[in-house]
View 1 (cartoon, one colour):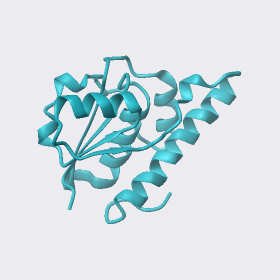
View 2 (cartoon, helix red, strand yellow):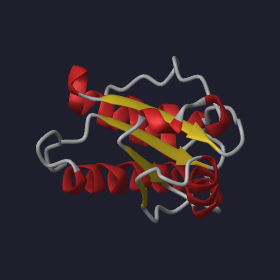
View 3 (tube, one colour):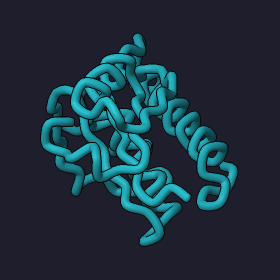
View 4 (cartoon, one colour):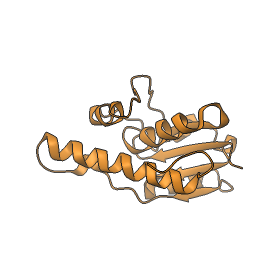
Length: 141
């Protein structure tokens, strides 16, 4: 059984903190969950909005890089971008790395509603992938 998961993306500002918050909520104390990026970014304000819809405040998220984390301390590293997968492999060639192809909602064009809808789609896609990958912990959304 997986006891620790690290989610990694490029900036640790959108996808990886969303995935970590969702799994942390589902797993509680049963699993160690964290997130990091190839580069350190700041939490995206749209992430805070769509996660608050699920009652998950993101204000405590402190962005960090993969260099700030000991990858050997995790059973699985879930890379949410190709760059994060490459960097994780460089840092720990023996790490169990999975790649989940998740769209980048920050590339959405349009007004506020279109952007929020893109972030909500990513959040919901992450929930579905988490439910499939960790069925013993996560319920289907």
